[in-house]
Amino acid sequence: MAHEILAATNAVVTLDVALPGIVWPWLVTVNMWAKSIGTGVIFMLFILLRMHPESAKNLRFPTAIVAFVFINIFLLFTLADLHQPFRMWHIFVYSNWTSAIAIGSFMASTFLGLLTFLGYLAYKKDYATFDKILLWTTILAIPVTLYTASLMAQCTARELWQMPTESAQMILAALLSGSAFMILMGGNKLSGEAKNTLAVILGLSALMSFIIYMSEYIFGPMKAEEVAATLDYIKGHGQYTVMFWLGQWMAYLLPMLFIVLSRVSKSESILKLAAILALVGLAIVKHVWLMIPQLLPMS
Amino acid sequence: MQLGFLVDLHLCMGCKGCEIACKVENEVPLSTWRLRVKYVDVGTFPETRRTFTPLRCNHCENAPCERICPVSALHYLDNGIVNIDKERCIGCAGCVMACPYGAIYIDPQTQTADKCTYCAHRVASSMMPACVVACPVQANIFGDLEDPTSNISKYIQVNQGGVQVRKPEKGTNPHHYYVGGGNVTLNPLASQRMQGHNLFNNITTLPVGGHH
Image 1 (cartoon, chains in turn cyan, purple):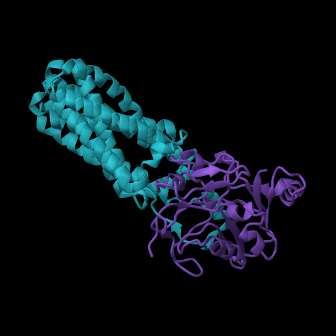
Image 2 (tube, rainbow over the protein chains, first blue to last red):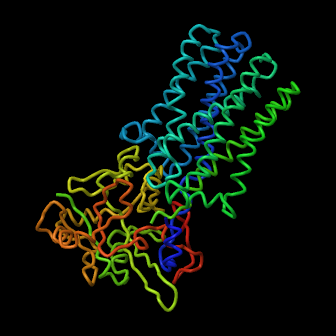
Image 3 (spheres, chains in turn yellow, green):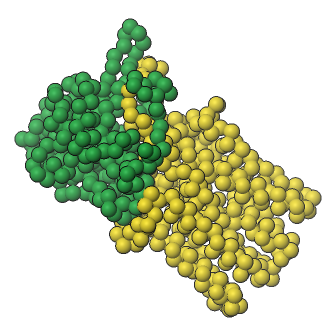
């Protein structure tokens, strides 16, 4: 491991060029966060229409609009992050099919098309067709929300981003943010049972995400020196230590606690607070996890 | 033909001639580098030693940058060079993130990705890369890895046990080799990069895309 080498050789870089700083900035954080909400609310509508159809029947139009808006935010920030945004069309003309970016662009564009169609169907109150299209939209939402994990996995030597783990985190982020947003958006339209279902999804996805982050935090350094060096940025006096723990508390620990409290006290306000914290905390968690592997010197 | 590079670190004396030649030949903008020589000091006074490591694109056989590029701006030439089409690049910086060697940068003038191409334009005219020509001690050896009579093939045969690549565990199969390298020279995590400890500057990071 590098730590032992450092101690043995006392090696110090004494002359080198300036290295690139953050390559993917906060724009990419917003990209991932908005995509989680855009896909997550579709998952939740699909679940609610099957488990609590009476309660969810009035949520078709607002959900389609919210998903449409957040997927557009995701695409807008993706575009804004490009150094040559006016060449975006190259992706569709010169597509490289081994690239997660290219495949993701096609999937996200198709997803946006389906959301537009869903919005139109809901506006026309054609619910039978809406529910059929929703099934395919929900199926497509899975790879759309996962493709960023594939993209991160293609970043060789950024070993913190492991594909199975990132896939799980992406889908859990969609479930977490989708359920949180639906709790806030549903309001009085949702029955107590429907809110309970959303609270359980929110709580369990928070718990599972937290377990995965803690597993990586504790055991990751034992697997690869890059992971150990990356996690140093969130340990001790690391650059991102405070932000990492703030995110863990806001996105996972406090929402879990508040969900339990809301069930005990039957308080809708506490449940809404849990949802707001989860949404804000998720953005912080995503940001930290995006930044720290970029701080590692690659050469 | 599969072109490759080998750097004999026993010979390199850190003159940075290759770095300058590359800058001039390829008009590499300020604040960016296709090729750079890293100095690492090892040991504690009076038992100290300075090492020099020229770093450039490894032209991997299994290149992560080529795989992640959504528009195939990064592509293979028939001779194994991983080339870049700057007119096609959209500047997503996926390649910058995917390269395990930190060899790709965003050109602040064109706002597209750029990197060492083994001077593909010179090679196409049967000339050696600029850095090879400039090296006063012939530490840079360039040639066809598939030709057993080429200088690079002979060098690899002679130094079989001592030939190394950077980060072999990443499975990228670099076409860029080192003789006389060690963990300190080839592994970026094996040396500390302290703020303010550089010889001629104290800059350790730059904004991607650069400022002028």
